[in-house]
Length: 160
Image (cartoon, rainbow, N blue to C red; front, side, top):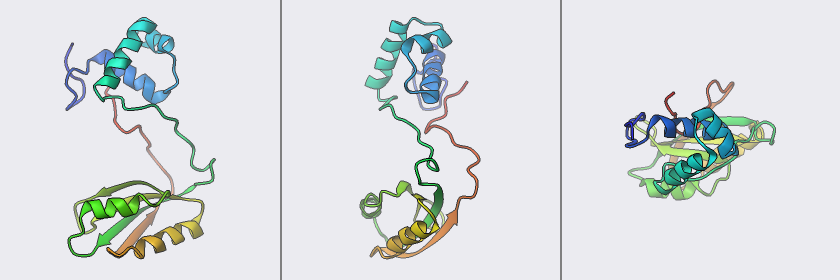
């Protein structure tokens, strides 16, 4: 291999990176179409994708939906302030019960966690925040409603 083009991604050569970029743009792209972009045959692309899957670099293929078009156009980031030394596992178990939470992370700073929430409208968002505040470990929350999403990328950027 030519060496890594991504920090922390050993043996990810420029061709693998290009394949990942193409899959990130369209996970349904044919191996032939990807091959035309990266100058490989369709079977060679398939072998590389299979290898990336075995290594865990690719762990699935999905579709990106437009939240507004599906009725989930209201979005917020909610800081969660937990009581005492609430374990991350306790927060995770609670947050997983909310289908409206699309991501949740423990964070540094004053808040203990930040959750990314999607809702149908402001009334629905308010209900979600009220339910979060009712969780036994939650002391308080602070919400920031998203006005305009400026940059949205796949989970992992792939260098050009």
